[in-house]
Length: 421
Image (cartoon, rainbow, N blue to C red; front, side, top):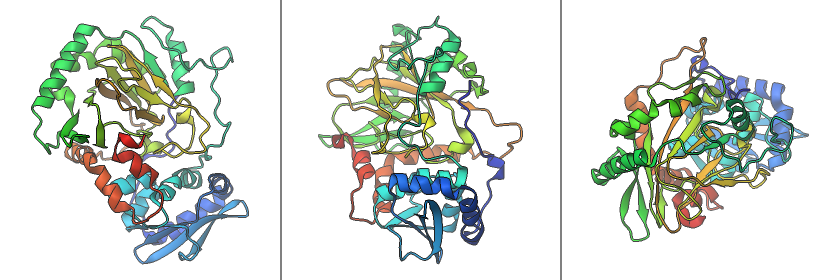
């Protein structure tokens, strides 16, 4: 039983020149995984991808059932303009197509942003040997071999092996009655206190705009530093056992957390996020799968915007942002009560449904995989990580800047606000 899908070492990441990528790495990848990638390109009906990098350009496509590379952009259906460092990050899975757009490191100059994002699974097939998901590839079974009951939730005393099998198969968990209502009331009060301290534009929060034009704080970053009650709960055995659930060496020490409020009528900003994977900006092959933990400070149902997940999507090489139109796996909604906990793998597609009648609050934390013994690397500084996290509140502006096309921009519509849903 394992949810560890890592295939690369961070210590092996190095700056690659454009000539190395175009003349050596991509041709070698095509020789090794060209048929696998070509199948994915054809299945997804992707337009030829042009990469325009520092004065050099190539186009990737499928010919005769295999990936193909040619010089120039004459046959490209979508063109992305990158700098050499961005190309190096892309081919090493440091950043995805979407990650580059979100950080203003890729500009779509022809075709659509959607086409650029849609190439991500095919690039992973070519560069990492992961087959692009096709209908029927993922099936989920219980330990008796029967179809898995995806509506199942688990109590504190349920069999741990059964729980581990469920998350390995489905990529998520719903755990009932983990914390008490009094504990959640104390955390709720700390969220309210933190929100009251927010000053417009403060980089310790994510911000969103409602239908009345008000700018509201909707996520308290590093909330664990503001709430003693939460710090105690994060180290509590009622939560910490999850670190050992799958036997994959997840780290339960020094858990951080963010406090979220889901207000009504949000029309712009990162409050009710569209379908995405937590590894969607990059790094899947170095970090997946961690476990993201949601603590239901208030209950969540269809009226208050419960978490949506797509069972089995952690086992599918599919677009990590948006819901692929060809994805056959069906979403479900995890309706919780106060004190319940949800868990999802970092590569499980999930989304925040917008609340319809009442807001809700939730705290997100999680368990990362410990680095492997052979993987020694210099982690980015705390300041760098925090600055990048804070900057995501303005991601819509960078998505706008990344897309120079006049075509359908489905992700941009989704990220603009919940009205598009």
